[in-house]
Length: 526
Image 1 (cartoon, rainbow, N blue to C red):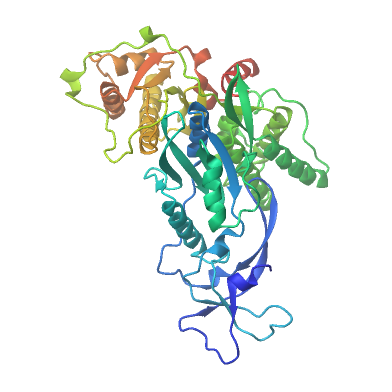
Image 2 (image 1 turned 135 degrees about the vertical axis):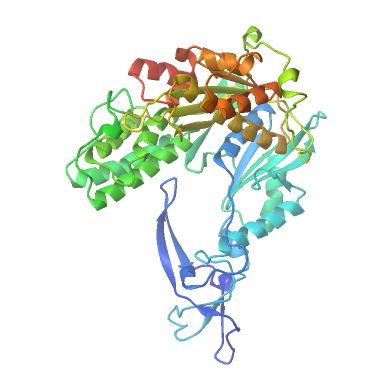
């Protein structure tokens, strides 16, 4: 243990134990991180203590905020540097009164007080988060109310262009977005020990980060390739023990025609069921890192985590075989705005129906700086897709400019009797996601270029959403109907029709044939 002096205080025989202290054991923990890197830590047995009175949880930056950051950096022509703070928790004093056990050949029988936020204590995460927040605030940064781990500070480029510098915090991983990120990193290095010199990010949260170029325009890209390679290596090593291996070169993530809800193969044994859960978790993280092309397949198989069957496990292995053969796909954060045919979007006077309704812009948002971003959204629903429950499935894909930022694939909570109903439910969910996305952008100080451009492949939904005089004939869809129409009237979004073969959200609602899948994946991934 290299940080004994900082983390522990050894009591001499004549020193008394502080009142309120609790004896706890300490031990080594061997862990596999989300990027499959193996680590070992000396941790405190915090589970032996009662929950302390202070707050014990700590937030981390959301993944869509990270994706936004890479897009904004390219769009505003600012640089990014990353750094990792060494022994982060040990910088923070602990607020818990605990005693450690005896350890070390020369410390037998001696009482040890844990005085730093050692891993394992219930309040350590919150203690470190609070200490780091104080340091960042002292640098002049402000935490965003939309995501407290996104920090911004007004800055000006040498040419007079006003913009915001950003800090992105994920526990002890720091990303700095600035015209001069080295200056910000120097401020950090004066306070904390950085494991290495700050560099252009190469990995983040298990993803490989790449500098990319399209027609001379520099941008960023995210790839799950290294994560997938390591996951497949571990999986193949496990399969080898039982004489199995990944087979074939499938052209689709799921076997054509397979329906997991109709599978009646034998249930997995408990140990295999547990392994099934871990494999699904790995695939979900691959989706978070940009493998949108397997999202619907992973979502459908996730419905059977409680009682997975042999057939479900075979399909999980089929997905791994697929991504092994298609491991080079990348998510590129292209900052170039899309150019749409404006005749698709017809503007009407909604005053008679919804009065002077306007978009709700947060009054406490910072003044916008930088180039405005464009929201482009694709919405789709697979009506009654589940053969057993007949619930429909919603798929939503949100772009900022030409960069995929957020994706959604989930079964609807209700059973809709018509395609129109399921599509309108999907549109209502899209409205809520758009409003949440806009709120974040406003609170990050990022200007927005007009209403979101939303594309749907159901003409009835487009008509009912965009033409004021259109009436609803299905009363049970009234809430979704007015929710969407009011958002259109307020200028939050505008809706246009798109043919299914060009609707990228179709990828998120149902398993597709190989030729259609390839065409849509080509529109999203590189």
